[in-house]
Length: 215
Image (cartoon, rainbow, N blue to C red; front, side):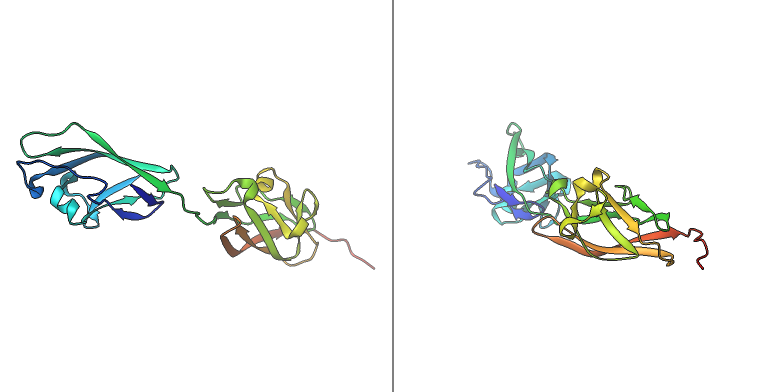
């Protein structure tokens, strides 16, 4: 059968079924093993003893809950028994249709730096998770900044944005403007081109420098 990534879908008697002229549907029992990419459910709960009957299958009580992984497929093995004999083990295969998962900012620790300096923003300080999107297609858009500017390779951000690939390459930095406020910051959102996350704020703590007196 086919289902959406991360969803729960009924396993119908059109996609799985067994017949036995000597045994009624309640007596035909499926024993499930080796579940990959999710879990077989009975009435939306884990299978008791990893079993369900043909009658429960026909009644629409059996379903598969996908675990949201990106593999594109899922499966489980099963045997069918009438209480006396069993079928050989078979595999029920599920085609999983991908769903675009939005970006999630997983690291936003901010950083410390010296007043008036420029410092590279590290992956350990700012990072976004998006299993569907390559780093060079994951864009950070800077909406505003206080106490300085975000730079790309030492220059003003083109279009006010940078990619995660550029962050990973240590091309993204913050230039402090030398002001005396103990913190600086910039506000940003992250997009994969379809779904955005934000606004978020990256906070910079400043170590003051001793400015010489001016007459």
